Length: 166
Image (cartoon, rainbow, N blue to C red; front, side, top):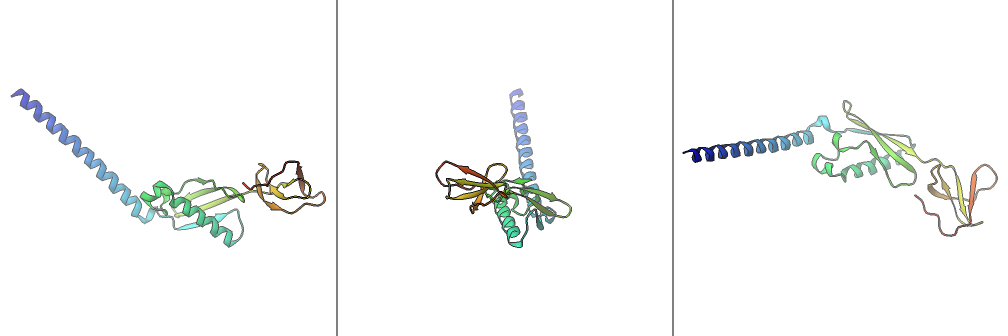
């Protein structure tokens, strides 16, 4: 009989462990579903600061929303969920360095603060060839015309080859 008692205790312990594991899984699934569908966790309005123009603002919003939609957590929670949005995005665009996201849970808004690259000077390959604007980090931003005079800092390089942005 003592062997039977041990088997019964092991069986009930196994059942308890399975029940607790099932309860934890169902609770996690339910909490995820609640966070996904509750309107309190949806970002309703996205604003952009740091740049001018409606077109530029809508381009930034569109890029950020597509980047959020590609994140793995967005597949679970949805792209418009408060918890799916990170605090900062780093883009490979040459016209700005980063986008910082300031989320407000009570107002259900996200403010995108864009840090733009400022033109510091012009980098020119061999005399008379192509030139490009660069910023204070030395990153080539965009093509530029040949500068004349002393108002714009100009760096002449003896190296040959095209100047690539980014």
